[in-house]
Image 1 (cartoon, rainbow, N blue to C red):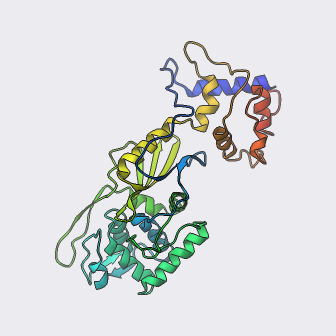
Image 2 (spheres, one colour; image 1 turned 135 degrees about the vertical axis):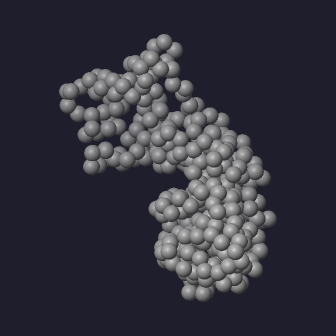
Image 3 (cartoon, helix red, strand yellow; image 1 turned 45 degrees about the horizontal axis):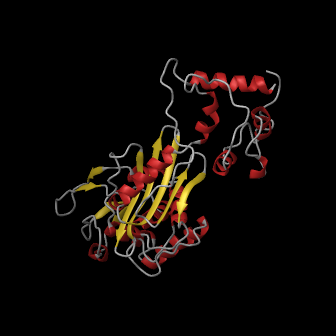
Length: 350
């Protein structure tokens, strides 16, 4: 029975590979951890729902303008994209990165989100916060902190909607990863954050602007689709990254970096070079060095691979349910391992 199942899996894997094509290039199994300038970072495989590696991921630090991802979440929960908002005078006097808004101009929430997420405009963030907070920035910030608690971001506190340095404004790499994941529930954030260059409508002075995304990895590093940069004196350089390559989606956070683009590239290269779950499970069936096709008599699973397997979605209305990592011994005759790892799925004589 198991032999038949293994044969079926081998056949499926073979059919998925091009006939006569090149031997697949295998990612590294357990590569050396990447070396980056950031003192806090994390790499997460969203496809397998597992952290691949991290460093000082629970250390609190200023987060700079990646704050604006939470600002966008609160705005999208409380306003419509076509709402018309008047730019308050105080917003145009903010320091730091601005989108050049003109006091008294009326703009849509969508256009303000573009100015905030693409150009990282602090003036746009304050305008949106005043609109949603009923004129009170403090009320808006309270909503940000309430959302952080709801998401389990227990090492995060917001003091403003734009990310300017403040002793009560901080987060961690782990919490910012939670923020990235939460942002995926708001497609407009991903849509806007992926815009590389946009021309704005003319303002009341008759001027239009070309807003270039502060994330220079967009269009320059294969697969990068977002998400947000940050840079202040206290925070140094921060970057929340999202990249898709083939069936895999990776998310990265770097904090306190000297070069957030180089560090994020390094983490993504490392992450995509590690085994994904599909690579690990199908590798025994690849023709390798002139052989292949048949699985080995045992299959070694590292602790990291066990976590990835455990994180796989349930199949067939939950027939696959493992209670703990202890259900996945690291070495076992392949057929028995497959049967025990997939109870209810590997059945029958076909």
